[in-house]
Image 1: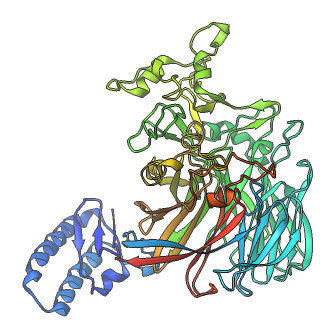
Image 2 (image 1 turned 135 degrees about the horizontal axis):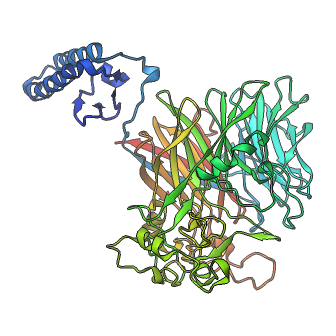
Image 3 (image 1 turned 30 degrees about the horizontal axis):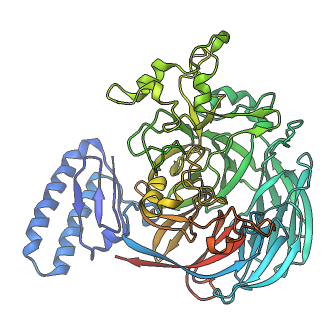
Length: 631
């Protein structure tokens, strides 16, 4: 049993459900306690609870605040010394929601003029020169000055083909690029802060993201190893470590592979890992996507989006290795608060519970620590497998009409199983599910769901959780989900910006168009502490905009704001001058946000906390000022 203070509300909750309430002036409560209860002295604990309750009633008539604090501290101290051990503040698990308001104000924008060409995708910031660098796949690496964030000015363009990611640490800029052939290895190039090249080194296949360790001595690379569209080959995925401890002019590369997990495949799949590519070896099917690093640089966590898993990497210097693979399991869309809109033919924004499971398949991941505990945040976008020789996704109605095992023209779904999933009290019938206005047009995996091996689908799995999830990290590296936003993203958009509900990013008007496939597509997370409040930001690739949650209590995040600077009613189909850019693109606003970056006040050009968002559809960079006020 464990007691933990809540710094914002001055509470000490425990498993029995009783609360020890303190005063805001109590320095002990303000710092925090962590008590480990011992069974033989539970009766003392109950006695202390009663004492506190009596004190709460008694001190209402006392005016001397110092005396009140002293009384309260004495009671809590007795609890601490008799019931367990008092740990240091550094190990306290703070879990109170610090109530606040959040406001995002657009300060400035930089336009690349590149429409739907990934003209602005991944940002990185140089605080020394107050410059923002971002990948522009149509041009190369763009550098702009944001000394005046209201008027960003172009500084320099570094021409480079196949840009995927950029990162900055100290006086070094790193750039990941992929050659035209996916069968060839990619590279990482290093530059100084003025964009002058220092060195270049070969890494793995299709380096998708790069990130410096906090000490700046190593650069981690997620080598996705994505197969070419023709399907004739499939390079291996890996995690690269580029050591620049001897200088960026002397990079040394180490590659961490996945071959050691080949014999664990059956168990990993059973636990929820998604491995479905025909004729692919284990390492070939692995596709690392995004990476986060612990605050002490001892561990890294990479998403395997298509594989529905997270990789834990041990970062012991010189001995880096893939330590474990954590399957993420599935989301049950029949659970209360976890519905979805699965149809683009229902004529409405209609979120409902349906018998379908979602592969979380996160794209981005963030890592943060609070009170000695480590958490991961994933944004569960989803992604299917598709190439010339292999397509995984199919609409549910096609499964319903398909031939079952042995060529018999029976249902391809197990109606008894689906009836149980619906529940006896559900008015919806199994035969209704295949209707276009229900879930007939929902794209699901054709390679998962035959649980009993009899040739039909006992369950169906769609791509993505359409949500944000929080995961706690145990000492052994295992992870456990502690929170999921359920259907909150779709629900908030439907309430606040209904015409943007599950719309297509570069087609407009297109309300509900993406309901059959991954919905709003949460893309990239960012965790930042602003004015003492830990906030989770998440950009939505399809619907657009930024969602944010107060995560002062990681187990109970609280939604606080949705901002979407686009007009979903603007016509993006008209292109009378045939220049490849919609005639009204300028009026549409920010489209398809991808990369997101926080600039702390002490590094900000105007001394204010800033948020930078790169929008790959509209090809522009938007700079926001963040205002957080405590309530």
